[in-house]
Image 1 (cartoon, rainbow, N blue to C red):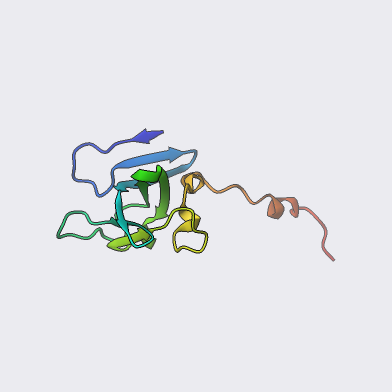
Image 2: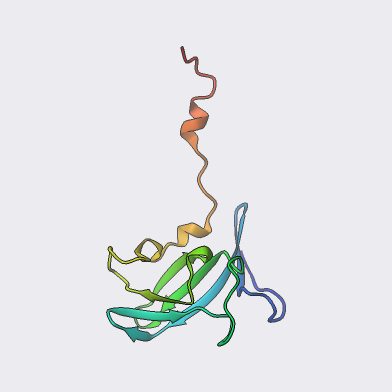
Length: 119
């Protein structure tokens, strides 16, 4: 489920609820080419930065390629360079990383060892 906060005072655009996990999402987009990628500025306004705990994830769309990045908020600086399709790039692991908005899978290997006799 997706919810939008009432008004414009929140530092995030949406809340995404998936099972037991709720994530605050800041949505951005870019079409600004720079060197071998796309530059995206992440500011609350031209003169204000986001606080480190303002949102859980930034969902950034690279418009010309229709590629999304789901980047943890703590990884965000004022500006980032996104280079879609480049496995050695800083943010490659977050390219189309929609799974980050889902709760983690339970650790079945730890549960399967419960009740076993270890000597």
